[in-house]
Image (cartoon, rainbow, N blue to C red):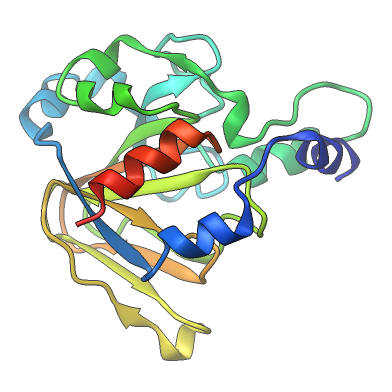
Amino acid sequence: MREILKKYNEADKVPEDIYEELHTNFLVPLDIWIDGEQEFKEKSELFYIWGDNKPELKTRKGMALVNLDGENNSDDISIGPLDHHNRKYDNGLVNECYLECHFNKPTPQLNGACKELKQFDLGRSSILWWQRDDNFVPHVDVILPTVNLRLWGSSNTNIRLRSGPDSDNFKEAVYEPNRLYLIDTSILHDAYAYDEAFQYFIALLPTEKNYKLLRELIS
């Protein structure tokens, strides 16, 4: 992973003291709400299968809000797990490895129900559309210090979100539909859909503007 490690070392990062200040729980509720379910259903053709690492999960889809080119299309590499993409392309020779912060072009979908997110400095962001049994297996998304913060939310309570020191000691998160949360993705966690749901999968860049906004929005 030479290429991606080089990019990680060169990238701006969230200071660890600020990360600890903001992440007082696995989910920290924010005073920001998005009700986009009807709009997202009307844009079903803009959702594409989430990567190619789980071919059996063909209903696990995503719609880009912020990506590399500002377009919504089927070959968008932001729609899928970045670690899987980087493992495929990191040979130390080609510039095909990315961090969340490298995605900074808003798509037109950021102007609808999600327009309130435009107040942030955003990285790779999307709406996830899951059906019954879609899931993310236990994983961590970042190591500290990290190059991004993550906001999460769900359009309903059909998503079981759990976290803990190990999968035998997971605790299920309690959350309100359509509310956004600052989520600590350095903690082992997983997710499972009991039925259809839309999730907000939002990356924030490590900027003073974002830290200030989060402090103001934390309830």
